[in-house]
Length: 540
Image 1 (cartoon, rainbow, N blue to C red):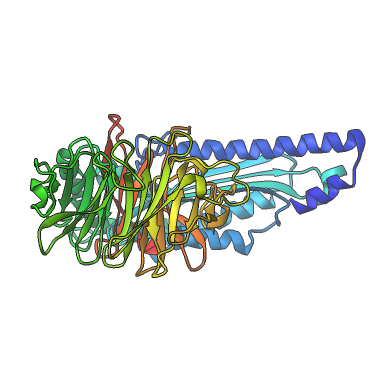
Image 2: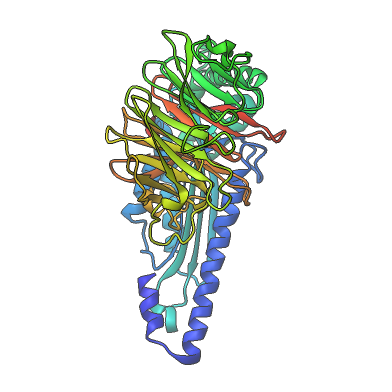
């Protein structure tokens, strides 16, 4: 792109206008191909369009549109290919690598003045019990070798997408077809060896006469367990708005029912943990308590959990060892009041160190947002929206905030400013907001998180054992109606996607479970539902 800019800068008048129009049209054409590819990838869970009818759930997408590429694939593209395949089986990795590099060589080596497109789908083993679908888009427009674009070479677009396949949703013959298609297209395999190479790869999916030992059967069993957990939870837990994953249980906050549910992922059966009772007093059993409208829940390493009860304007604490519920923040007291209480909506942290609350004071119509920092003695500091010092580029702060998390012992909080599309940090009890992630234009994976375009960041979760931050990126009611979970490496600042779904509102991960858990829109109603997602080895 820099070479193009330099060429255009040397022109003037009508020549410059024609050049800008031509190059702008090419970039729009390239971006249109990417938009079409993205739309197609978003249909994978429901019924993919095109000739390959393999349902899958997108994990990772890398795409780019730019000018003036080399005649041969450079290290950047090769690294993307290797990253996309991750820990794939070596046999599949070799074949797919051959096909992708062959397609790139063919596409970039074509010197005819025209546009050329390659669109393919592959299948691979992404780890124990994990089958991945790999989709690839390559498009290139070769410039004329005369005039303005003589030195620019070409415009180039690529899109790579990996997605997890549930074998229960895909006919076995379709997987066999994709494997055979890959072998047939690999020109490095001699014609008389293709059947032999196909048999080698397919036996990794399904060994002859050895039921239960192939990756196809392992994948079926693994997806069956996750599908059973998902179905059992959604049968009892209705329209949850908040979720927290502990060492033993997954907790759900259900505002319409006034209950906190929990489930042991290995046993599948949800049970009421708190709420559903009639008492508004402290020091009663959690299931005897009346919760007015619990919107979020947070759990610590010991199993104690906090409840944000928006309807009662209180934060409640349940210490599992004592099996009692108590109030640790009362929003009806100063600086709140009975007439205009501070209502907690989202919560995160540990009672033993301190925790953060995103709250609202509805009487302040212009700026209702409140941040409440509560220390281990339950002393609260309340910061008003109107007192916040905003980062450069944010003229007005939206009160739509749907996530908060603590990263370290400093108790500095990260906040998902959903309405403004970024994640910012605020010191304990402080007022200065620093933009950390989002606010850029990048929508692809494997890019610096500070450059991301976050459409509607919601729930935040931090895994201290890995240093990964998880962001549930919703769509905020703006098309395209698809979203994902972003994982941020807080040490390197790089971002990648690890799950997807319709308007993901909350996400959590626990290494012991080796799954990503999300709350997202139901495809059948207006309610939110729970989903469990497989995480391939190379994304752990």
